[in-house]
Image (cartoon, rainbow, N blue to C red):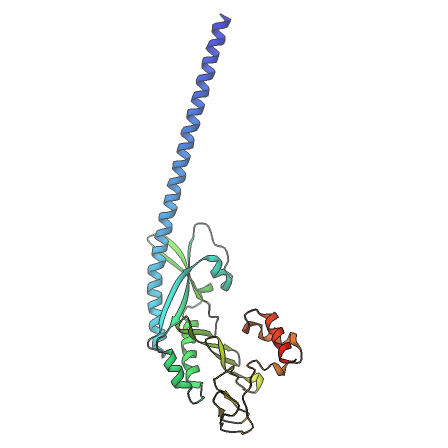
Length: 288
């Protein structure tokens, strides 16, 4: 009797074990299926959000392009690319958003096939003012394209679906770069009373109230002399209007105006690829 009872208990225990294994296997299969379904749903929702953001972006870029063309540069093209949140955050320091909000990030760029010829035509006599006005008008339109939006954030909702579209560019306020291509670009930087023009990242014009409205050029551009006219050409023997003692400044950063390398590096570090250290070394080389 004891032997049969023991045998029966063994059978029951084995059966329970089998049931537990089967139940566990079924739960694992069910859990994997639910995870796959959740992942699939997430991917579908992400695609819908990206599609909604893409449609919005097409319309946004077209409207901005029309507005920027209207202020002067008729062939200006507004282009854009998606980017990662981390890349966008490098420029705008965006904050975290809720897990239920889909975010898509775009960076704008500005192109013009005619910008080369316009620059040559408008600055050939050494007068940069009309070219600066053109870039400034485009810059103002760029800066004022959004009203009251944090970091150019746009909340787009359609059929109950909401996506946050972040639209920015690497041009800060009061700055704009218009490219003919990736090798040819024209940049206007405005900071209070300081106005600078760069061609292919090379400084060709500067006007600053703090420096008696002197402009500087690294090579082959134009800069005002100490009188009322302009000096032009690519060397110190070029003719000039105004004060005949005016001459080309070989240094575009007025390094001679700084007695201390730290002062110079602190003000000009943004103009050097390696920042503060390269600006510091530049001061030391110029003062050897």
